[in-house]
Length: 215
Ligand code: PRP
Image 1 (cartoon, rainbow, N blue to C red):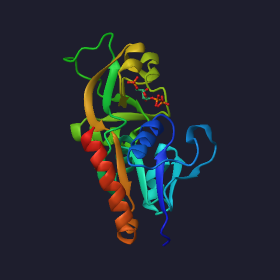
Image 2 (image 1 turned 60 degrees about the vertical axis):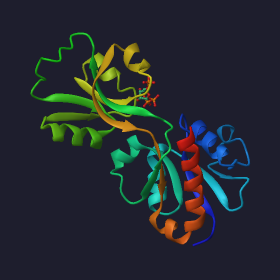
Image 3 (image 1 turned 135 degrees about the vertical axis):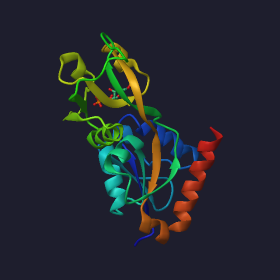
Image 4 (image 1 turned 45 degrees about the vertical axis):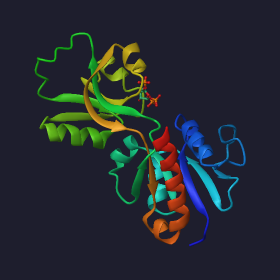
């Protein structure tokens, strides 16, 4: 195993917050990541590179040891089973909630759900576990985005999705009715990397935890 540390970040919305955290511990990419089409970036620190991936792929790269560390949303980690890596730190960025939501119009909390509830989500495993724990039989409809449209169009009775500001729910006439999980970005670490590159990984984790706890 070489001495280089590779840290995988999630592209898109979470990237700016992740880069801000890294800059607070003195790690700066050698170029402007959001403006680049590259996927791997050197930094101002020797032997530390950043990899920018889709959220769903960060844990896979860490689990297989291609990336030593990663920053990934707990929504995706929960969906994938939270296995195969250490999860030492809640980075307290990307904070939101995994919720059940329904159409506000006609919603009556005292009314029984239909015997076969239809639930649209991209978080199929989270939804399956949640309804199974409640003892509720459901048909899960897998979507890849714009979940809020499902109850509006009659595709599903409920959705399971992340809610940050609540603006998307409100704009589409939906309300959140049940809380499934607190979500935020987590630091994850490959198990072998932690043994082989302990000092560097421990230092980065420690520095990040100092920043997170002081904010
Ligand atoms: C996410 C999520 C909601 C929205 C919640 O979608 O699926 O639609 O953000 O944020 P809010 O509570 O602040 O409105 P995203 O923008 O990631 O796109 P997606 O539909 O492709 O998942």
